[in-house]
Length: 253
Length: 222
Ligand SMILES: Nc1ncnc2c1ncn2[C@@H]1O[C@H](COP(=O)(O)OP(=O)(O)O)[C@@H](O)[C@H]1O
Ligand SMILES: [Mg+2]
Image (tube, rainbow over all chains, first blue to last red; front, side, top):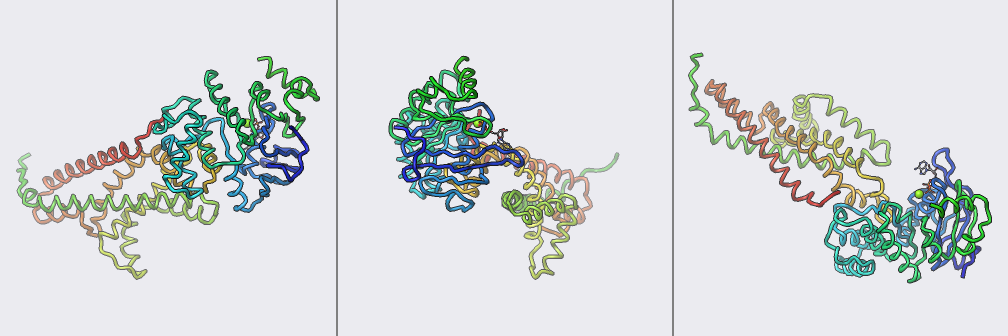
């Protein structure tokens, strides 16, 4: 099932020797990885290790300075067309939800399909309603984000991203800002998405989710990939001291 | 104090004064609309990636905020004809008010835009929207909502500043009252009445803004 050294041909995302600086600070060191279609990756590591930076480079929210990032055959460069094309194929869910407060749940989901894809209003609406149904929140369509709980907001954010019909979904600590009782509803939504075959990269410390869903767990520290393995192996037999220390901290609290 | 109050010239001039109020309203509303357009356009330039555009806006704001409005309106009144544009006093006054209010609006609206979290812009970009679309559909409304009270006071000020347009004899309340005063020499009665009218106009402006705000910014926030 898992093949960490996937060839370019069947890969949905490939990063080759990617380096990224914030000014003089080097945030990514020679990152090479690939994710094939339908694969679920859990990305973990201590705070500040570059997880967010890595996935934000994939949809060009942050520019990288060296190496190559390729999504579904499109090479991400300074060329605006490639950035547009990639962002249309890659959905992203943020820790802080980032719903648009002045738009209803339904309008949040309709905005990008209408403005970025040029869908007619009716089509955008039926698509949005179907996806709100899928994240089990259809009855809240007319509400504003501030009227929803955190878990509901995050499910709307997932539906909003899905409305662009992306081929890949990136999650940046989607449950970290939630009250504990709301974590499950969001994880369940993500599990459903995984079961439907979505290609996913999830930055999360929910190790139960990793065990259940991930094809591969990637561990990062100090801007570099330290090790990657299928979850069973990753948890039972981590190769590096750094990983063992991290797992010790995260599983014991 | 044996001054005899005589409001007769004011009462006789009431139709003119009321028309003057309308003139003031017209100047204020048109000036504000222009100021909003300049304010929003100016913020786009002020925050654009082009250095020349940013510096042009910084220069514009500095010039307008550090010179008297009376001088600005005279400048425009005498400069526009030199540039081949002959306008009546009232349109000239509207343009002057729009430019003046616009410069202040740029700074106010820019503050509003900066108050919106970076995550909003990122979410929009990640959804495949372009920067201009993100500004138009995602940032603008919450930004305006955040600074609407400041914008309201700035525009009430602009309404009162419109009295300066009497200097180029634009049609508005102060110009009308000056005429009645110089015909009747009833200075106290005339300016007492005009003061009351300006108070009412300011109050109406604030009501108008409150009404607009309640309509347009009705979404709940936490
Ligand atoms: N915009 C930025 N400017 C400068 N440094 C940044 C910026 N964003 C992140 N960093 C730094 O890059 C490193 C990696 O950050 P990040 O990718 O957010 O880590 P993680 O998501 O794993 O916690 C950290 O040291 C952080 O301080
Ligand atoms: Mg992070």
